[in-house]
Image 1 (cartoon, helix red, strand yellow):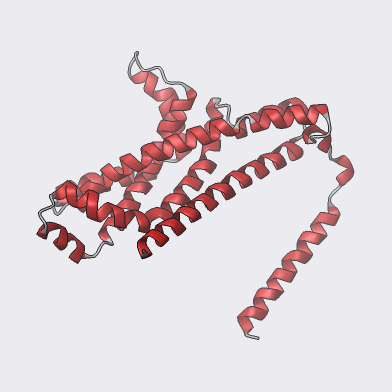
Image 2: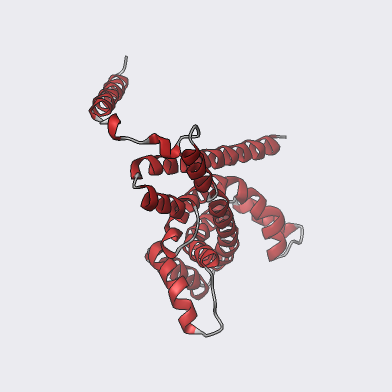
Length: 257
């Protein structure tokens, strides 16, 4: 057996021993799982209230990721220009947006935009969507730029030889191949979006985290409530990850035909 395998097994066994020790130290008598137990009326009511936030989390995350993908592609295109001045548009946008913490951006969109103009009246849902989409669009732009630049030069020359223009080459040659390569990082960004959507709870969005916080205030049982919240996010992210891997498998299968 190789040394690396021995070290790996030792670390694994040490981790199991540590978890077992900590597990035995917990005071289970102080826990009140009835507040989230499906066997009690209170637990069923609390669980239903928590699960009700899933639709808002999913709707906000998927809306934001769609907007960020479109915006990211538009920002990525100037970064591929031979002109340094046009490429500067891409670099300035990406660096500025990535430098702003997403929580600060949420506050700025929700509280700051209405001050700029009297006609701007934005609710918490769209404030969260706009902030998440803007923040993620900078990362999407870099993903698209890297994916497009990875296309072989011969593919572009072949597209030019059959008379395709810039947008035709992008639509029929570049993007179909680039999508296959950037799908894994796009999937990672969707997972990231699901997790970051919890920050929108600070402005009152009734998603998973906000509802969990409200239950904690009313029941005074943070461990039980937040444990269910962790499990909810875990299930959501595992489902999304499985969906992304299935899409990768389908794209590879279609490519091999």
